[in-house]
Amino acid sequence: MSTQTKLLKTYTPPLATFGAFIGVWYAVHYFILSENRKFIVPPPHAVIDNAFLNGVARSELAEGLVNTGRIALFGFLIASVLALFGSVLMAGNRMIERALFPYAVALQTVPILALVPLFSVWFGPTRTARIVTCVLVAIFPILTSFLFGLKSVDTGHQDLFTLNNVSRTTRFRKLLFPAALPSIFTGLRIGAGLCVIGALVADFFFSRGDLGLGRLLNNYAKRLEYEKLFGGVILASALGVAIYILIGWVANRSLRDWHESEARSA
Amino acid sequence: MKRLVSQGDMTTMTERFEPEIANSNNAARLEFRNVSMTFPDGTEALKEVSFSVAAGEFVTIVGPSGCGKSTLLRVASGLTTHSNGECMSDRKSLGYVFQDATLLPWRTVQRNVELNAELQGVPEAERRERARQAIELVGLTGSEKKYPKQLSGGMKMRTSLARSLVMKPSVFMFDEPFGALDEISRERLQDELLRIFDHEGFAGLFITHSVPEAVFLSTRVLCMSARPGRIIADFSIPWAYPRQHDIRYSPEFAEMCGKVSESLREAHA
Image 1: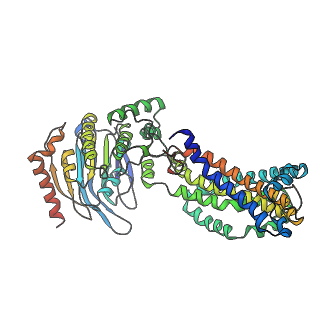
Image 2: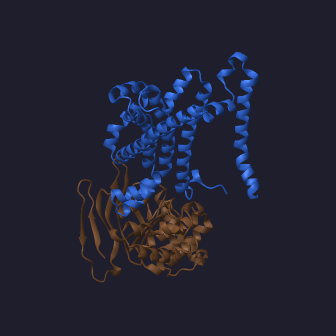
Image 3: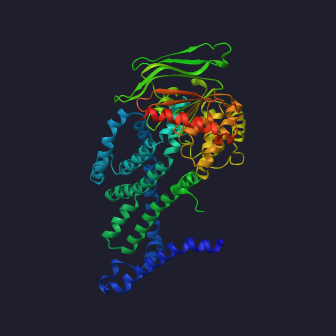
């Protein structure tokens, strides 16, 4: 197969889906909605005009994107580091796992959204409050994926390391961590998406402090500025997708030589 | 060579080093004296097992699945603690080949072969060189940069062998290493294992449920009963090394296999 046909085969299907999506979008606006309801789904070109080409809206959205992106990124880093420590502790010691894991599960079942107003009371409408929200939303799936990876290490490999009388740190560095890497990346991917949601939600609730995408979305919705609302939604999604792709790229770099999930297609 | 002596007991396990016995070539490098092993749930895996393996000896234990063969090997290597009796082995210089190749999938053949040496602190330049020799010895030269998933079952097992060979073990244990291979790779690996054994002169302890494999490889074949595992027969295999692969088709070989099979059959009637 030539490179050209290969490229064609790779990119045609997703582009076709994208085209179809835009088509449906226009169709809904022009053919389905009645005249007085057309404003609830503005057409794509109007979104681009009003949200991305209009100077005021553009700088507003850009500021929101930067602030929300920064919160999401910080939250993601903190959640990942905490999850790594937590999972290593739990994987290494059964008592610690028994002591902590039930609460990690409980954390997952607590509706974090209900706690956000509380954080705003405790921390004020600060970055701290936003980052805490992010971390709490994202940490559990990251932690469970990490823990699953660390505990699924092949017993034969464990025996091999035992026969070599290795220290705990060597076992972690040369066996547990690399073996858990595919699960670790799974956790990071899920966590990245959740951190963007966490950052948006926190911002949505706080009507003061740094201007983020969440508050802009809220404002646009209240003011019936649906073109800008669509623009904000697109940016928020793009932020999630960007982080997802970035992690996907790192995962691919580190796993493609040996793990099925990232194997290069023949 | 230091010999590690351990006195097994459920509650106390003492380990001490004994000085090297002069002229130790004929001395046992691995010795079981009345070793018994009972699992915490009360299952008796081994009962009063006694035997020894000296340098240049290749002892194979045959028995049905689940008779405690693998447990015996785990006890011998120190992965499992036995309940009673004495188990002496040179654990500082131990080779162990698992049932599966247990290669680390994220390491290339070269880096997998270096693993044991790396974990035991052999300097990089030296372990590279030793790995190169071991890879050559098992016939994998040219595949150093491949990852395990690119290897056939036989090549994985060769890599696993090379990984242990790098440490030049004085006691070499094999836990049914060729069980998952097809007949052709299996026979070829048996031939190569014998060549390596002849070259390295370790004390070999091999576990299998294949009688012809046991007879072909060994200086001695021990038959094990069903659980709790006991040694019920001991056959000396007379043929000198290097053994040619076609001794497998000789009447003497068939006769020896017959004897071993017969004693296994009697034990499990």
